[in-house]
Image (cartoon, rainbow, N blue to C red; front, side, top):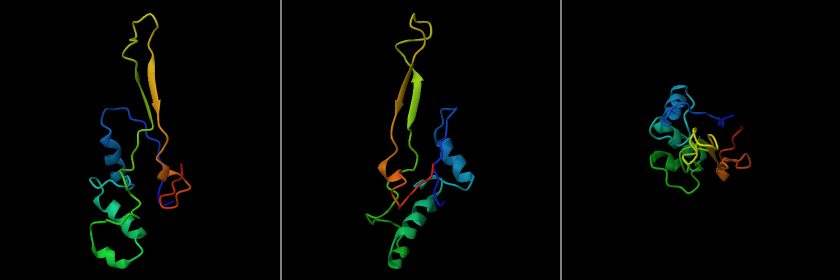
Length: 115
């Protein structure tokens, strides 16, 4: 596939490391203009029907498939600050989960991702 969906679990407090490691491995994060500047431009040009705009380095078309950085926190788990380990109730955790953005769904043919 041209695009893939990865589940990454962080073990540090440096979330930008995801972007660094994926770029170094040759599979940059979609829309990451910092660690892979040509990525967003290449995707836009591949989806642009007219070759006239290929001379313009600034994508401005509303059909541009990359609208944000292709990294999303979908599950967060942290210690509950109101129930520390030494409390009578014991240690608790707060869990928050989000659904992926709609344009990441397999039904969207612009960036159909396999997970």
